[in-house]
Image 1: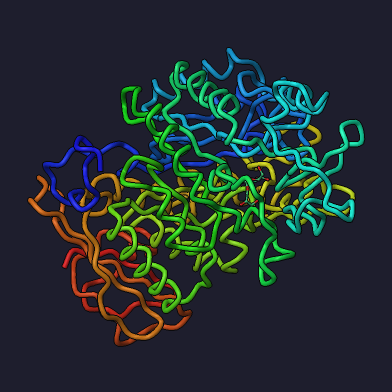
Image 2 (image 1 turned 180 degrees about the vertical axis):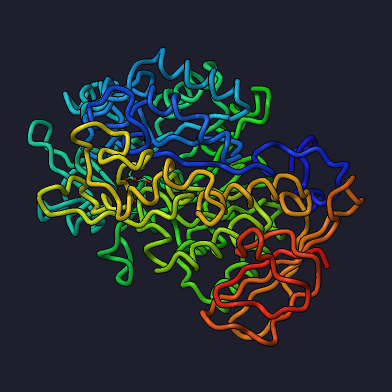
Length: 528
Ligand code: TEU
C-alpha cells in the first residue's frame, strides 16, 4: 500500500482523511437515455448539463457517464472511433468541458467511461492496422494466422452471440480478435505504443478536469500472447467473462500511476465483469491498481436474506484481507433493472436501504431513484445487439406524453413513465424519489454510514441485520447505527429493532416505535 494512501481499515477513524470516492455516492447516466437537449429524441451532453440540478437535489457526489465519444454506435458508444472527441449526436468537446465545469460548480465530480480493451473498427488506428501486415499499427491489435483447418485461431466465443471472437480479414489473410462485436477489435496492450496511446487518452481527459474513469472490461487488457483455447467447461461462454490474465496488473499500475500524478484523488473504477471474487479483488493490487471494482456477484444475488448475507460476508472478508474498499451496485445499462428483477416497489425501497447503508461505495443507475422498471421493447424497436434496450429506456422527466423528450425518443418509455416521472413524484413523501433523497441525506450526515466499520449480526430467518460504527465519536451524529432488512413479505415478530428510528422504508409520519416488529419488506435504521 503506498504510504500516503489511507487504509480502508482506518476509514472508521474520524481523524483519517479519505478520498471522495470512498465516502461518496456515484450516479451512472447512460447519456443517450438521460436528457435530450435538442429534441432529436437522443439524450446528449447539453441535456445532461441542464439536469445536473436533479443530481444535486438527489444528493449524489459524482456522475459517471457511459461513453459519449465519436462512435459508429455499433455498441452505442462502447465502440470508440475517436477517444478525444465527442460524437455529434451527444454534442461537442465544448459541451463536455461545460458539463465538467457546471458539475464542479455544483460540487459534483465527473467520471468518464474509458474503453481500454477495444476500439471501433472505424478507429484510424484499426484502419491502419488492417491496411497491411507491415503497417506500424498492425501490432496494436490482435492478429493471428488461421488455425491449420483454416478456421479461427482458438475456440473463444464473443459476447452477445455464439459466434467466434475472431473475424477473418481477406485482404491480409489473418483473423483479428474481438471479445465483443466484430466492430470492436481488441487492442493489444502488450504493444507498448498501443498502451502508451491509451494512457494518452486518459491524460487528455484528466487535463480537461475529469475526476476519474470507469474502465470497461479492464480485466481483459492483459492478454497472454499465446491465446490458448478456453477449457472445455468454459468453451461457448463469452471469453470476456473468463479471459483475465496476470498481464493486466502491469497496465492497471501504469493507469493508476498516471491518475495519482494528478491532484484531487482521481478515481480508477474497474468494470471487472468476472465471477471470481478473489480475481476481482486482485485488481485492486496493493492500493496501486484499481481504486474500486464493481461487485457483480452481489448484483446478481437473489432477493433473499441468506443470499445477501453470504455476499456481504464474502465481500467484506475478502476486501478487508487485501485492504480494498468495497463497492455495491444493483443496476446498470447492461442488465435488467433491480425493480424488474425484485418485482415490487416494496422490495426496491428496501433494496435502496441495503445499497445505501452497506460499508463501501454505492453506485446508482439513473432511474432507480424513480423505481423504473425495464421498458417493453417491441421487436421492431429493438436496437441493441446485446438485448439490453429495456434497461436503457429514456428517463421520464415530466408527466406529459413525451416526458420531456420530444416527438420520437430513440427507445420506448418504461412502464408508468408519467406516474413515476420526476415531475409527478417530486415532493411526494411516499415516492421512491423522496425515499432516495431521504436516504442519501441521512447517509451523508451520519459518518458511521458513509465510512464506519461494519459487522453482520444475528437475525431471524428472512431478516438481515448489521451494525455500522465509528471509532472516535463524530460530533453530533450517532457513533453507531443498526440496519435491519426484512426480505420477506410477512411481519417478522421476532425481529424487533431496539433503538431510535432514523431512517428506512417507513413513510414520514409513520415511523415505527422502538420495540415494534419489522413489517413486511421493511428496512429500518436505528440508533441502538
Ligand atoms: O460490458 C462488458 C460486460 O461485462 C457485459 O457486456 C457482459 O460481460 C457481456 O454482456 C457478456 O455477458 C461492457 C459495457 O458495460 C457494455 O455496455 C459493452 O457492450 C461491453 O463492455 C463492450 O464494451
